[in-house]
Every structure is written in C-alpha cells, then in structure tokens.
Image (cartoon, rainbow, N blue to C red; front, top):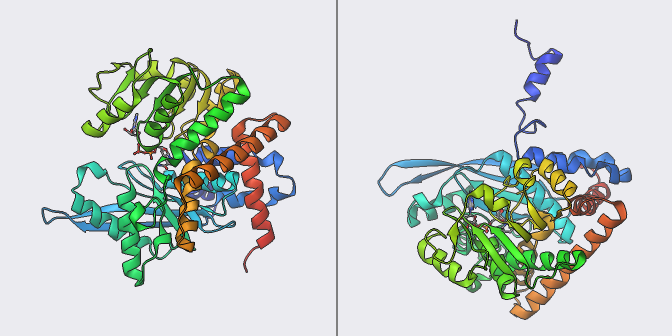
Length: 436
Ligand code: NAD
C-alpha cells in the first residue's frame, strides 16, 4: 500500500519534492554543503543558519514571444533573491539552455556570500532564462529580454534588486533591461541594472573587472605561496569575459598561458599562447576553434597539465573528484561560479593545491557593479584609474582578511570566506530581527 501524506513516510516522500530538498542535485546541494561547513564557526549566530538554506524569494516566470516566423515560443525565466538582509539583491542574469531553478538558487546564494565576503552593501540574487541566445534572432532576443524584464519588474529596482550580465548576456542585454524597466516605470532608472554601456550610465572598467579581480587574487595568492606571476604557467578554461580578460592580464604581466579552452576548442602550447591573437581569433570566429597558435588537446588531459595557476572560468561543476585527483596546479583560481564540487575541493586540499574560491576570486565584477550603482545614484562618474585603484584596494583587503582567518582557523580560503560572509549576513539578520 502506498504511504499517504499523513504518515511519517508520506511526509518524507513529499519533502523530497520540495525545491529545497537537501538531497537536491548540484549545484544547490553544493551551496548547502558549503554553508554547513561554516556551522561550527558561527557561535551564537548558528541560531540563524537556516536562513541561508532558504532563498527569501523565488520567482518563476513564463516568457512568451512571437518568433520571426509568426509562431509563439515560451521560455522559462527565473529571478531568485536569496538574501536581502544587508541590502538590495545583486546578481547576474544568465541566458543558457540548461538554466534551472536549482542552479539559479545556488548562484543567488553564492552572490549573498560573495557580496558579504568582499563587504559590499548588497544581498544576493540571480536570474536566468532557459534559452540558447545563439539560436534566436536579434529581434527575438530583444523581445525575450523585454518580456522577462517586465515579468520580474515586480521585484527588481535600484533599491530592491539590481541585475547584471552573466553567461550569455552582455552590456546590450542590460541596456534593453534598463530601457524596459524605465518605460514601465515612466522615468529613466539607470541604477536598475549594472554592466550597462557607458553611454547609459555604465562604469569604466566594468567589463574588465571580473578578470582583473581574478588576476589580483591570483597575484596575492602567489605572493603568499612564493609563486611569482612572471614566468608562471597558466591554464584557463573559458575564454569569455572572465577567462579571456583574465588570460590577457596574466599574459601582460609576463606569465605563460599554456592552455586555453572554450566551448569550441581545448588548446595547448607549452611555449605560451599569444593571448591577444587568440582573443582576436575568438572574436572573429565565435570561438577558439581553428586558432593556429596552439594545438588541440583532450579535455581530460587539459585538467592534468602541470602549471602554477589553473583558472576554471567557464561553467560550474567542472572540477569533479576524478579531475581534481589529476590536477597538477599549485593554485586554482575560480573565475567561474561553483566550478569545484565540495568533494573535489577536499581532494585538492589533500593534494596541497591552494584554491582561491569563486566568492573571492571573481568578486571584481560585482565590486565594479557596486561602483556603477553608486555612480548612477550620484550621477557623478569616476575615471578608470580611480575605479581600478578602488577595486585593487577592496580585492587586496578582502584577500588579506580571508587569508588571515584561514591561517588562524586552519581552514581553506573558501571556508574562511564563507565564515566572514555568513557572520556578516547573519549578524544583519539577527540585528534586524524577524518580521512581524
Ligand atoms: P561568457 O559567456 O563571456 O564566457 C563563457 C566562456 O565559457 C566562453 O568562452 C564559452 O565558450 C566557455 N564555455 C562554455 N561552455 C563551455 C564548456 N563546456 N567547456 C569549455 N568552455 C566552455 O561568460 P563569463 O561572463 O566569462 O562567465 C564565466 C563564468 O564566470 C560563469 O560561471 C559566470 O557565472 C562567472 N562570473 C562572471 C562574471 C562577469 O562579470 N561576467 C562575474 C562573476 C562570475
């Protein structure tokens, strides 16, 4: 006989259907596990830890549009506000055919941690649409973006939740989102999104900021580990906004980028890849495939390359236990969000590989997004030098606080970053108190 909901067994069965199911697949399960690892360090704040395992607000929207051929297509859209205790939500919007609610929840959770770890006055949020932007026309993409923005318009705004670009979106997506929100509101609201074009209140240095942050934290980690950037061998997965710019900064600082990968090719050249040439090739051809300055290599061999810095900067879940067991890098710098599974994290730690966690390594983007939001509020814009100086100060300051705590508590940089962040978020939660 099957269990009914009013039996213990029945409740357990129904609990398994909850979107918060702790046995949920990656990456939400990874995030929850990372939170659990911080529990012993929270002291009296432990009382509030469940807050972090319950996204505050989860919005699923239908995004219907008329396609160019006259048919109607529907896309699934999400906006998750994981935690707003420290300020308005902040986090990107991802356009990718594999986006799920589970993934957006995890990404929103990591934004909560990231913003708090670096000390930005934001909560964590994230959004996404299940669409492959390369399979729709420019007009269709614009209609998708406008309808999605209108649908999530009930929860976003300059003082509520401020989206930004992520995988599959860019400055033009943000321009369309800003325009749609402004038209609906009846007044230009530049501060509703960041990562906008400069002409619409965007910030100098924003496009490069995440890659720059990756480079700064790699440099600081190298300094602590006695691994100078100059002459270091670097391997980078993902050759977009984060990986491409990160690779360029390593290259410019005298490092030898020996392997790069994107969704079209995985390439190696032990003598060092000419990164500006590879970037020009990728921009012209839509990817690295066909770039003559390096040779194809099997993706599993790519992860086993001996190097000083390994930078996963594509998608999450790339460094699995199996791959981690073969990693021969001194330092892993997580450009992507969630590229290392918790179990792989342990393997890397046992092997003596330092991991600079995503919530620190790729926080440069949201830091300059914060600068953009501040500049939009005051309508007073800073020079690129001012922006890069402030970014450097925040990233170096955050790195050094996290490094110090990791040494003191004998924990990984990730756990140290989570301890600092969770304490800040839960302290705000406790001081605000529960409503009503
Ligand atoms: P992007 O779209 O500009 O680039 C993504 C890159 O990854 C592309 O080169 C693509 O070809 C590559 N890629 C996709 N699938 C791949 C696969 N299966 N194997 C190898 N390469 C693959 O995106 P981005 O903005 O550079 O974001 C990359 C990562 O960094 C994401 O995890 C994102 O969440 C994170 N991130 C981005 C920012 C930002 O400011 N852009 C900030 C923080 C974190």
